Length: 260
Image 1: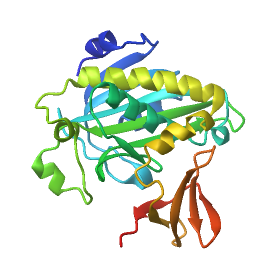
Image 2 (image 1 turned 180 degrees about the vertical axis):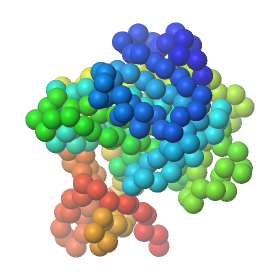
Image 3 (image 1 turned 90 degrees about the vertical axis):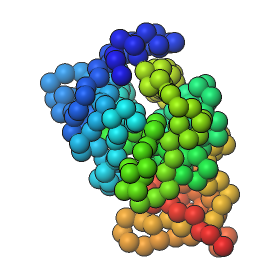
Image 4 (image 1 turned 90 degrees about the horizontal axis):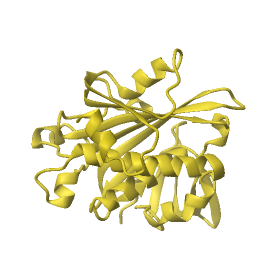
């Protein structure tokens, strides 16, 4: 990838600064380190390879030089972190819309931070927030997408995975254009989110939810779990289940499909 090619491919001409590096521990970690000495608002850091890329709960993210798209975007909000619930879901919606424009059909979202296709994981999102409790705050938005995963890499991943090459049956995918389209959509949806929050995006997100109206189990951080049918998400992006005639609300947890 080249920063000049990505910038040239942007349709919105959004005011973004784009940097591409060969190898780094983690694009999100590096942007977080920079926040103490510079403004990272609208700053994009992409890497060909990450040696310590991570997702939720510190899980490693596999990146393949030339076969992955891994980047982080810094974005400043006037609100405090407590007012930014649903941001991860908004980011997922933006990425799915961008992939639509490039002809990658059937992209779905799994609460709270996965992009999936036909039940297999395509990518993940990790949003880390910092700043003052009442605002302003800075979001470091980390994204990892599988573009072309070799068979050896697939064997080392403990869940079903897919990539854009398999979905589209294309041998070649221009990652410069891919990142540019995603940044176009992200710039638009983040501006909307800053003004109105997640609520206006809720219906569009639910239309893509891979587990909508399905029976699931939610494993909670305290070790307990709950089962129910997914009703959707609320205006703050929390997962809503119907269980035993009650509505249950979850702001965190690991969700899995209950089969049978």
